[in-house]
Structure formats: structure tokens, C-alpha cells
Image (cartoon, rainbow, N blue to C red; front, side, top):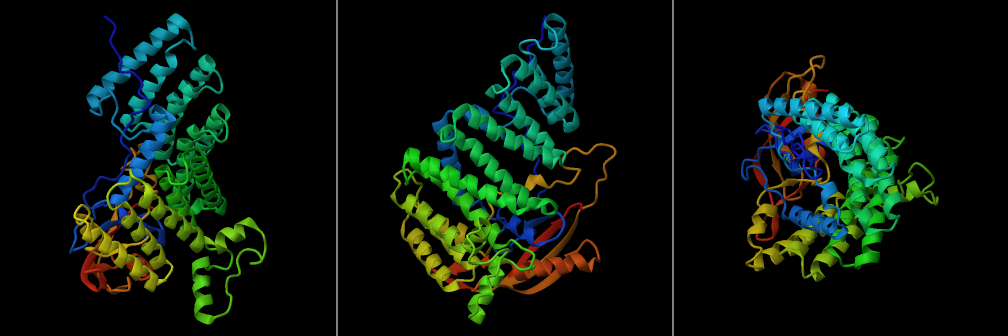
Length: 486
């Protein structure tokens, strides 16, 4: 009797291979890693608060994204975070599935030839099984063949190949083949645009995915970092804003996600180091302190050059995007309780990052009082203000893009380097600055690592702890910085 194989499920896949070590918190504290060389994961061991729960704004973003995908009818293509349907992660059972898929593929090939109907689905299932076992090199080869067979049977531009390409991207990421990941994301964008047209709302999920890919690639691969990635991400998020506004109106909750993308791209614009070795943020601060325009960017500051404008306007453009988020949450009947106040916290964080501390304190106070006076949102105050929070909170950045070989299924010829760490204590004053930084423990005597950690904390801006709406000093925080392989 022929065995029933699990169907290839485009909405499922192996869980993204995040580091699940209990010492690693892949949440809001990950952002400090961008100030350290090498591949670093920053873990949260804040003594007064423990690991930070996810900000409630993440729920709004998720709801918004789900609403967007549901409206476009593409739910079967773009959600790849669930577990496999019928393909077990148990090694013995996965081995059995490998044999079953190979037998089924051989049977189809003998009956229908190399391009038989149904062959692409079986190949995709075999690729998923390899992927589940961490055999990404084999998975990539099989997915590549599945895509080719799908194109032969369904047409070069048919969307049936999309879920297979997306699975292939996961394995390419795991292998660190970034150029190919980049090419596949661009191809998916082009393929959807060819099928739907430039301004069709069904483009929104692929625009969102490509924009976030550019942001992640820029943030987590410093050796490949190019300004073009930020410009492309920024333009894609603006593209999504234009489609949503034109289709659903200027107060639609689906705008939140691309607006937050514009905030992220502007943050990276602000921290872009050009040939002069300083960032636009640093030069803007010098301008305020000295009273003389220090904002000489890559080209003449009065030039119409688009790149120059991105670099000059990052603070104002980011602030405008967050203010639009506050406005949308304030009028939307579908917004979750306290959403507008939480967006105000994001606006305050933005002011804090750009050293406009008086504006930040006023906005923190407003948000605190709005959440505190409403019984339905009172519990959110502790999540937001009971402990200092390192800024910015980079919701878009995936911690799995830079994995040690041990996490992503290393092959025999790969080197797995040991993890090192530095544990520190520090205080955060009411202005959001780290002080009294002391190294408590280190896995090595490497002074370079210790210096990196100290420098990271010294340059990190924090959202201060609030008591009765007022920022206060916080003493005795502890935090662990974990370094993975170079």
C-alpha cells in the first residue's frame, strides 16, 4: 500500500533558528549590539525587572500585519513561522520521511518523466525535510530543482513557485549565502509586481518583506553595509504607505507597519558614517552646541541630491512618521487599548535618541498619565516604565541572521567557536545615561571585549525608569554581553 506523504505546506516551515539559550534575550536589548564589532548578542539580566516582556506595540504591529495580509488574500504565501505540517523534527521520523519522499519522487519520475505533475510538490516536501534536519545545503539543491519543475509545469512567472522560493531563502540564510538571499528577495518582488501591477494592494506583503530584508541586511552584516540598502528600504516603506493611503485611507491601521519601517530607516540614516567618519546625528549635535553649521554630508548640504536629503532630514522624517502613528491610533476604533499612548512613548524615545531630553520627558509624562488613569491600560505602565530600556528598540531586526555554526546546523568542515561573555553592572540616571559601569565577570581576560562593552553602554541612550510620571535614577543594574563566533 502506498504511503501517504505529508503535503508541502507553504504556510509552514521550520521555526526560525534563533538561539534558544536561556541566557539570550532576543528582544529589545538586542539593539546595543550594533555598537560593537563582531557578532554580538546582548542579553538582558536587569536586576530590578528581569527579562523584559515584549512591548505591547508589537501586538499592534502583528495585528496590523495580519489585517494587511488577510485583506490581500495572500495568507498562504507569507507566514513561515509555524511548525511543519506532518513533517516531524524528530530525527528518526524525519529520516523515514526522507526515504518516503525519495521513493515517491523516483516513482513519479519513472511514470511521468523528469517534469511530472506533482513532482515539484514532492521535491518541496523533501527539501523541507532536509531543512528540518539542518541539512541546508541539500535542502537548497532540492528546492532549486522544485522551482525549476514548477516553472516548467506552471509557467515561468506563475506564483506557485513563491512558497518554494521562500523556503529556499530560509536555508540560504542559514548557510550565510547573503548575496543569493538578496537576489531571491528582489526576484520575489519583481515576480509579484509582474503578476499584480505596481499599485495593487496585493503587493503589500512582498514590499514589507523586501523592506525588512534590506534593514536586516544593513543592520546585521556590517561587512556588506551599503547606503543603497537603506535608501531602497526607505523607498519601499514609503511605497507601502502610498498604496495603503490611496486604497484604504490615511487613518488605516495597516499604515503602522510601514511607518515604523520609515522610522527604522531614518534611525540608520542618522547613524550612517560617511567619509568624514562622523554620523549626521553627531554633526547635528555639534551644530547645536557650537552654533555653526557642521552638517556637511557626502555632498553640498544645499544640494538637491536625494541621498543628502535623506541624511539631513532623518530626525524630522522619523518624528513625522511616529506622529502619524499616534494620530492613526488616536482615531482608529480598531486600535488596542493604550495604543496611542504607547506610540507616544515611541515618539519620546525618538526625542531621547536625538538628545532632545526635555521633549522626551514631557512625552513620557503624558504617556504615563494616559496609561495610568485608564484602568484598562494601567498594567502597561510597568512594562514600559518600571526599568530603564536601551534604545532604540529594533523590532524589525531578526536575531537569527547572524548565527554561530552550532545553531544553524554546521557541517563537518565548519569551525564552531566558543561563546564568550562579559557581565557588567551599571546605573542609569534620570537623563537616560549609563554610569558607574563595572565589569563583574568575564569568560576571558580579553581587555578588548571589556572595553567594547563599556564603550557600548557609554554610548547607549536609555529610556529612564519613571515613578509617578517623573524620570528617576536607577542603580544596580546587571547585564550580560554574549559574543558569538567572528
